Amino acid sequence: MKKKLVAYFSATGTTRRAAEALAAGAGAGLFGIRSSAPYTAVDLDWTNRASRTSVEAGDPKTRPALADSAADVASCETIFLGFPVWWHTAPKIIRTFLERYDFSGKTIVLFATSGGSGLGSTKEDLRPCCPGAVLRDGRILSGREPADRLWKWADSFCNQ
Image 1 (cartoon, one colour):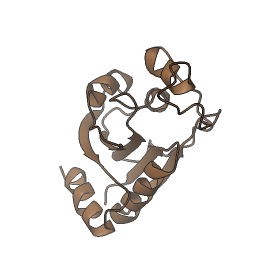
Image 2 (cartoon, rainbow, N blue to C red):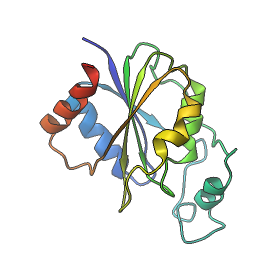
Image 3 (tube, helix red, strand yellow):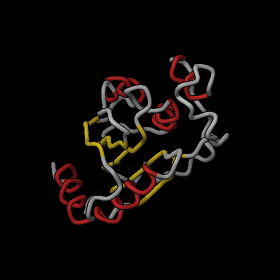
Image 4 (cartoon, rainbow, N blue to C red):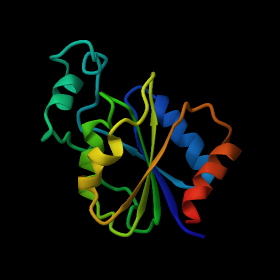
């Protein structure tokens, strides 16, 4: 059986719930991507142009530091990568994560949680951060999907 990993970043817990359900349904390992400086409610205020997330979104070179880098990426063939959608793309910490590891020859399946937008330009935005990987669009998850449905969806990527 091919080894799978669900790696996710969650600022409020929504993406964590979706990732946990996906990992349980897919029989995958689970890794939480965390910032060395956790995001506060003030940092997440997208209506404030001076908030941390607004500033990060506006600076293409921003790479928030990771709290740890112990994800078992090397032994996995398929990585499901989850995050909330911020400004129609993945938060900058996802770029930090992708640039930290070698994803050559691996399949990365994106999934996200969102209050109303889709994955937008995420795949194109992230492609330069993981050279040699096969990057696939996934879907928006709510964290309320039944595990068996998530397994069927995840399995479709693992048997390609």
